[in-house]
Length: 160
Length: 192
Image 1 (cartoon, each protein chain N blue to C red):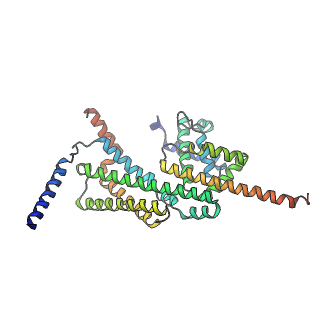
Image 2 (tube, one colour):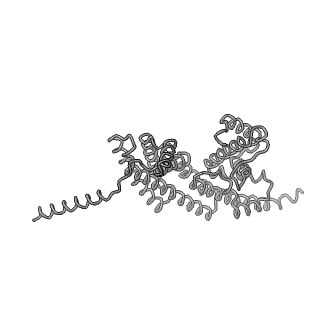
Image 3 (tube, each protein chain N blue to C red):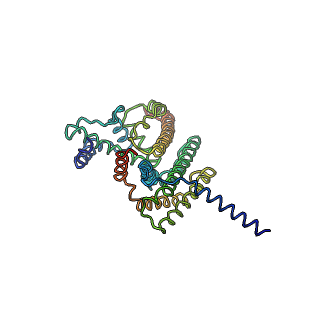
């Protein structure tokens, strides 16, 4: 079935996906997590209703896989500092309590299952190690911010 | 007397090398599609999995070390250094074993299929030998002094591995998947 897919259709669908959906996700981390979530765990195939209705299920699947690999490569090329920034933006966008987010990401490590299929295991291990370190640094920054807020609160009270 | 001993030793050395030469298994003339496929996979894994310059630069990037040393707690710093050391060792270990696999394949089978000339063979042999030695040295360096101890050597090893891949790729035209698939189907038809 895959051989019947038109390459130019896949390119068009990929562009469409980038323009309509992925442009709202500025960081590769966010894009990789999102695109990973469009993949069926049992079949390994990607699904996206909107894209499938404009093109076809096969073309949509291929386009999602392309964009997923692209986001993964971009994330792999990010420095640890950039990864901390991406994590900060991503956590803000999820509206999750920082403590809950850290607990979930530390114990479940969802980023492990969010990588595309067929990627080199060493590169995956490298990415996961970087995410773990970025998470630890982000957590420390978060603690620092909380402490700063606590320290600042008595000074604010007279004004209030 | 001394001349006799020397002659005996030389004779013994020749006999031993003849024995090992005779024992070496001859590759089948048809070549095995499985081995060709494995060689292709090893080459792909080196070229696309381990040697892309952006990945190598990222693994050994000093800016990450500097950032972590300035922004992270001491326990996170230790974890980072340990992770990077493990990854650096795994990287060099995998490059070494892939190069070793390619070398073994060349030694055993390339002569039957490849359009290698003498100078290419010599160049390839020197590259293989140099690369295996460099990888071993890197392993020792990473183990003793950490992943950031020899950035120049990492670059040289990656460049040498890239050269080995290019030579292998250029000289072993039969290693493309299409031909391997054809070979495999031919073997299947003949019940090999």
